[in-house]
Length: 332
Ligand code: ASP
Image (cartoon, rainbow, N blue to C red; front, side, top):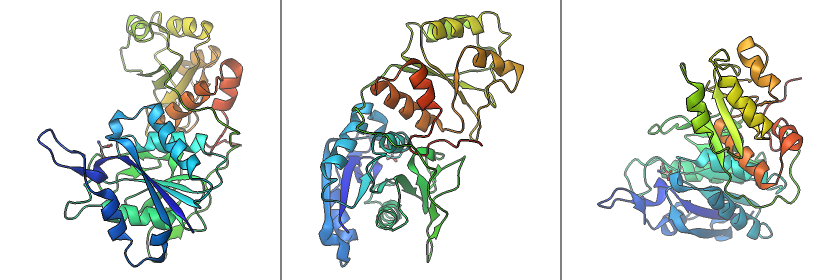
């Protein structure tokens, strides 16, 4: 078993500075010390991305840099570990899941709430757990290991800015939990995969939360000029205040301008069902696409992915509603 590690940044390798935490720890030396005496140690390679970033600075180009590094080592490694900041780790995990859907080798992302040098840090438990997950025969697809849980990468969301159990997958069970032995809960949801994806590029995607009292003028201002796609975070199963004067008209103008409108829910755990209520029916009539049970992270990364593949119109809607890498549950 050969493992390749991509170190992209994050708290895990940060040190204190007068301006706050910034990358600078000897992560490679620390990583080697974690593996002392383990047979696998001699079969591990590591790339350090340049620059190392706080993941809140990550863009689709940074997702692509990780994907490029993994693809560059796909010939010689059997499994991959990505060390990443926690803030946008779920976005990157989802992004990797689409672009690497046909890789056929496991990829595990992890990071930590405390830097590796702090007494009581969660860095060691997370990295060694992620490593164990990556080399397991059960490992499949892109996963995220954190706080003793292994989650499908495109189902995960950061739920705490401080807890060691900082991630959950609200709509599906974890893939595994640590213990002696680990408990595995079955394979991730299936997906169709993606042949030869084009690289991620930045896309002008608007993500808007509907709130009680939102006006048509505000929504119009937030979508002017028109974005390449709109993710509308609505109430419950996909409801908006459709009786608010002019609100649906703003969305109608977008739909007629071929701007894909994807309807998500603000609920932590959701299944979008357009047309279930009169309040959501207006969106269905406009040809908006429901996000099913996708997390915002999976949905945003998928929107950027499909736009980067030049998918528009009916094609975009079809792919959005189908599972590329297990990111959504298709109800029978
Ligand atoms: N701001 C950091 C990052 O996402 C937080 C962390 O890694 O925990 O890079």
